[in-house]
Image (cartoon, rainbow, N blue to C red; front, side, top):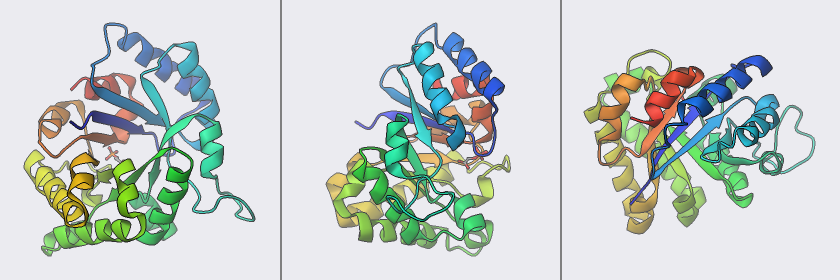
Length: 252
Ligand code: PGA
């Protein structure tokens, strides 16, 4: 049985004061009970990881894991501006997002770079959240499934059975930050296609890997999305900035 996982991705948002209020509000909201059999995480920007780790500890939010939004494909050396997986482990991260479409688009990251980052993350005992997804043009031209399964195949080539320790996030690019959520059925169909593609490699891996949906997840669409048999939770951007919305999605 795969657990339901909700991961908040703050992207380039937050401040020392705002983060403090967010953690306080989440701690308060969870006082009435934490849904069992679920996992939760939040991915603040790098400079706030240590602060958030400290706040999580202060508020005894053991159920809330810490994640990072990226990691270097290299372990150390002359890579100005990069952050290594070993540094993220030291700060208490459990999850690391790799290959997000914003990294692909704005930083020209290709699948192979995402896979190299995922290997670094795995080597340091954390869980990579590998993002895949098609653009609006790719969907409109009927190539969505081929594009996404092609992205998954590249991860399979590099990661092989280590994929069993990864999460995949299906994030249609046209749904990210646009308010245009994929319908639960459209998302389910793609999640199923991803799982079938993984099963071509290894059926056991396919049945174990959690596949999260991302792209305009909100409290009012989370229930229907999470009820789908191949959707194992959500990677939540905009709505995770609001503690009440994040909590509502965690409880959906
Ligand atoms: P969104 O972002 O929820 O704001 O659409 C999701 C993501 O990019 O992970």
